[in-house]
Image 1 (spheres, helix red, strand yellow):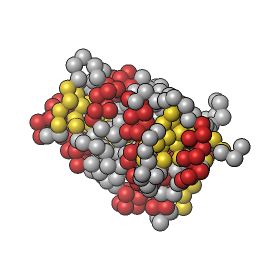
Image 2 (cartoon, rainbow, N blue to C red; image 1 turned 45 degrees about the vertical axis):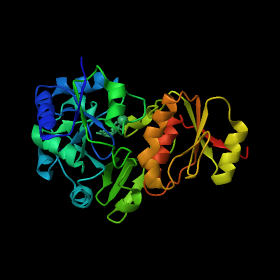
Image 3 (cartoon, rainbow, N blue to C red; image 1 turned 90 degrees about the horizontal axis):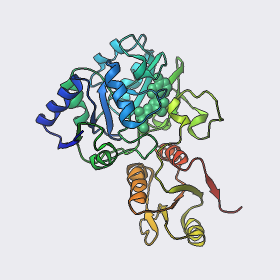
Image 4 (tube, protein in one colour; image 1 turned 60 degrees about the horizontal axis):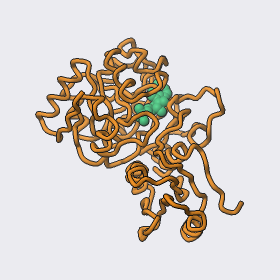
Amino acid sequence: MITELLPFSAQSVRKAAEIMAAGGVVGIPTETVYGLAADARNEAAVSRIFEAKGRPQDNPLIVHISDISQLAPLVREVPPLALRLADRFWAGPLTMIFPKSDLIPAATSGGLDTVAVRMPQSPEARAIIDSCGFPLAAPSANLSGSPSPTTAQHVMKDMDGRIPLIIDGGECSCGVESTVLCFPAADRVRILRPGGVTAEMLSELCSVEIDPAVTSEPAKGERVLSPGMKYRHYSPRAEVFIVNAHGKDFADWCLAHAAEGTLALSADPNAHGMFRCFGRDEQEQAHRLFALLREADDEGASTVYVEMPSKDGIGLAVYNRLLRAAAFRVIETDE
Ligand code: AMP
Ligand code: MG
């Protein structure tokens, strides 16, 4: 299959909609990361997403809408709190989990009786959904396990020959996937995956709990609420380690342990040599994380040491992705 890469335009959007109406899969930009989109109602179309990504069948997809009126047909029930959160955080990087309607096939929900729904903020994503006129199931547009794509070129690298079309909408502004949450009680949410809508932001409207799987490794065979959280994820070929040290302590530890092919991601804006600046604050780190992990592979790095990120705000999302990229290996420098 030839994979076309087209800039976002009225014409390319129309072409994307035609492909997806016929059950095909298209790589699309969103503000979080690039998505691999297909008609969420169409079982065969959705199974092509799993095939292109090599994604485990039990890992459910997020369904993307462009208007709140598209929510009701997808779900059996909308808790009042969900409406308040939608009012405040949609369109944006927030995914909410609802009991699913029969419109959503088991392939989309990974066999669960719930469905995850999000309304993206990116004008490109919204134009594409509008043009389709149906909801789009879209996981991140990377090969399963590898770092999520934040540019159309990243998508091309993973999906060349696997899908017919990628729409180039430039770099993703947020850089990490959406916050995923569910509703364990009327006035409470549980964050299953941290993202751009942070715990701090949510706690202005309701009480917030953070699922243990966000920051710790699920035990083998343990049932996790968000199936995606049990897989090794977001990993480059290089071995990634989080180093629990900051500033000069981090730099000194890396220099003492460096070998051929070692790269280090630090918060220092003057990083040089084997050090790369990973971003001075949480926002910048979220924006750059996946591109840097991909660059490590492009440079042939064998080991990547990463300075422990802050866990505040979107920093919790950065930490969550890094833990999985590092297969939960955190190095304590004083041991
Ligand atoms: P991705 O599509 O790569 O952004 O990953 C989607 C994430 O949302 C995964 O971690 C899934 O496990 C999670 N997810 C999607 N649908 C559901 C659902 N119905 N219940 C729980 N988690 C979900
Ligand atoms: Mg993903």
